[in-house]
Amino acid sequence: MGKKLSNGVLKYHYHPEKGWINDPNGLSFFNGYYHLFYQHCPNSEYPGVEPMVWGHARTKNFSEYEELPIAIQNDESYDINGVWSGTATEKDGILYAFYASVNSENRQQISLATSKDGITFEKYEKNPIISEYPLNCGDDFRDPAILCVDGTNYLVIASADRDKNTGTLLLYRSGNMFDWEYVGIMMEYDDCRYCECPSFIKYKDGFILSVSVCPNNGDHYFEVMYGSFNGETFAPKITSHFQKGPDEYAGQIFLAPDGRAILISWVPGWQYQPHEKCIGCLSIPLEITVCDNEIKAYPVAELRHLINDECVTDEYICERYENKGASVYIKLEVD
Image 1 (tube, helix red, strand yellow):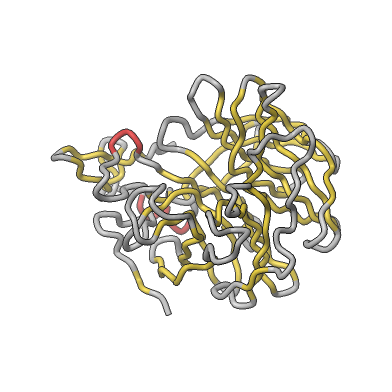
Image 2: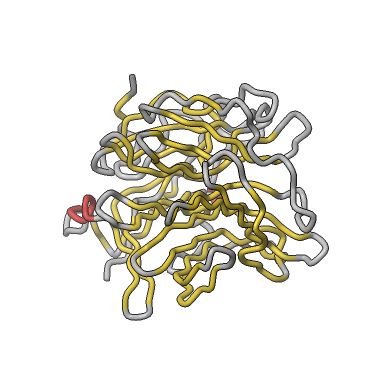
């Protein structure tokens, strides 16, 4: 069914056997496995050559990964130009995967696929489930983040308001996963091109919201917030940028069965990316905690055995890419 990977020089960070990888998608625990879906070009080492699909791997320990067949293909008119980023949730023994579908006219819409085994997906017969933009929304309309709480389902969709020059997070609501009503703008970022790749979870007495933000100055950053949600807007109480730099983007947070909030991000490697081989990968999973008015992140318990004298040298984990004779190390800061 799948293939156990050594990931080449990568020992602990996931990368498919071949092809391009970026944003983690649909992170979830289902049928006894942690499932990692991701943006993937299976036949090219660089994006833009072929439409994106959802690649797929699963693991029980975040050390050994089994690469599985493509989870969601771009084989319908509404997603022929790409199965873009999204999230997933389990309900009544079914895994619901929400994704941004790009149609033949390059219009971004929201679609749904479901799975009973976590491997084979069936697309909803009435896709796309959200096809029209709100009046105050531009043509950036993607990356749905699903939250199910107190019997109500919410979708947070990344967008932008070109007239106001703001990045926006739009909120939708549903009682059945299939029929969605627009609630309004949940959050807004000034002087911004757009927002991307949100995730939204209930955590302890509040909510965790993460988002990747693209300001007009060309920079980008990943933000994690903890706060309150009243069914219409999100009010952050704590905001953190604990992961900084060009190699931290499109992070997604999900809940493990034991209640842990786990973050996995995309490590792009843009500054040293060769065209011959995709060297981006997914990050080591981090457990997110909120305490003492601070959001903290630390490698998940399954990987903490790596923090020892053999694996850490000069604050760097012994894992590297080779690029034209130079070694590029992934840094692991130990608190």
